[in-house]
View (cartoon, one colour):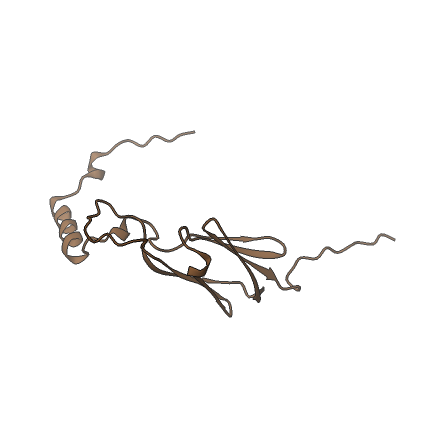
Length: 149
């Protein structure tokens, strides 16, 4: 069943003072920053997937090569870092729009303490970095056979 909500024009109205405050705040207090409009600018998106034996971390790093990415595991912290480099400089040209990211990035993730962090498998294919952590033996689920007498 769908609920209908009556439109109330007062809910959408903004006073002149609030509009002016927002204008000055965005213009002078917080200068224009393109990263406000692009979510997670420069931070690779991560997926963390778990099965019975492994935990897999997938990171999107399009446009990079494997040698441009640094993966560090310290204790229970995983850090993925690297740098998006500009392909060529355009000294005599002006951008009309620039949305491709450049610059360095770093993403740190807390890992469960139930993983073998000293033995990590890393794969890189089609701009996706995949890290596979094996679980410790005592954490893996075990099937118990029930004997019937």
